[in-house]
Image (cartoon, rainbow, N blue to C red; front, side, top):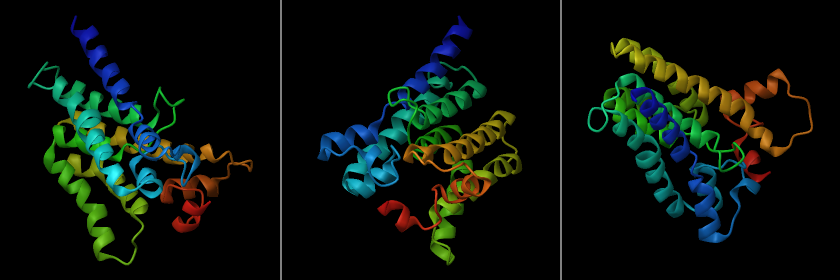
Length: 222
């Protein structure tokens, strides 16, 4: 019974994470299919660019609370008490659902808001340290590209988890999130239907800048 329950919780987290909130809000708010505009990404960032920040706010809240935080809380001692490993797995499943939605032909966003909610439920100090990296980088350095700073934060997250002496499950959660993020960045922009070969340079640009070209404004205007 516990095994079936664990599978159900993790699968449920993936399904809930798959709800394409940004796409739905874009359609309902202004009739815009955000998959066909801007970055083509089905996430809050592209929704903000194409429809407006006021519509992205409820999406971000939903992604944080329902997709990220809720599955972890359900798996935790507050509800089902399935253990920290299942909590971490539910958190990652929610992120993966958001990134590769079963309702959008495995297209999706980047899972940053979902991950925020999951990490908040798992370990608040880890979240604070993780979030401080892009915040301080954008605010206090000349390099304002948040995509680069978030990549740095994601790479450092397993290091922080280890230095904080957190349970090994949270270290692996951090590693899994880094791998999910890298995989999503390097493959998602293929939604642009690029006809050119996938070069090492292109993959590097996608990984570092989360787009096919380094200039963000030119990328959005395409």
